[in-house]
Image (cartoon, rainbow, N blue to C red; front, top):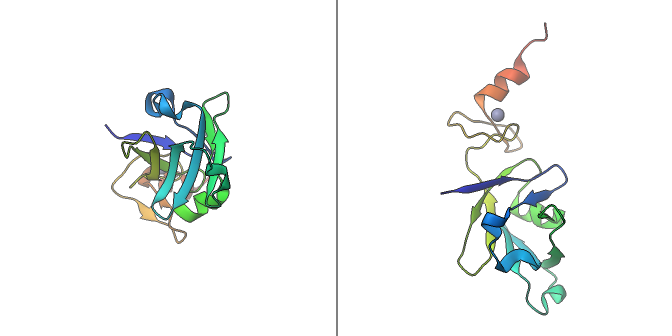
Length: 132
Ligand SMILES: [Zn+2]
């Protein structure tokens, strides 16, 4: 089963306990590449790595994805990401394919905007509808 989550307007993500497992509950280390954002169990010394951010979950089980890492991975607020599990207890967030930037739904007839964002046919209709 593919797990998907949406990045909030504040750049947060709620992974949920079912996906976090028991290893990722405390301090975590966030890193990023062009492939995506990796949330890993914290290891001593991670705070000294310039490419990482050590952080903790807030009370609502959310985590802030640092802007710098989101830019690197091209994951913007509002985007839907897919959760991948490399098997070492960490979670890799990658951009979900074919999901609408507005409603987050999946569709095959996406229109790609000049900025790379995808919009589904339904939202396109809503956006283009004349007010009456
Ligand atoms: Zn849509």
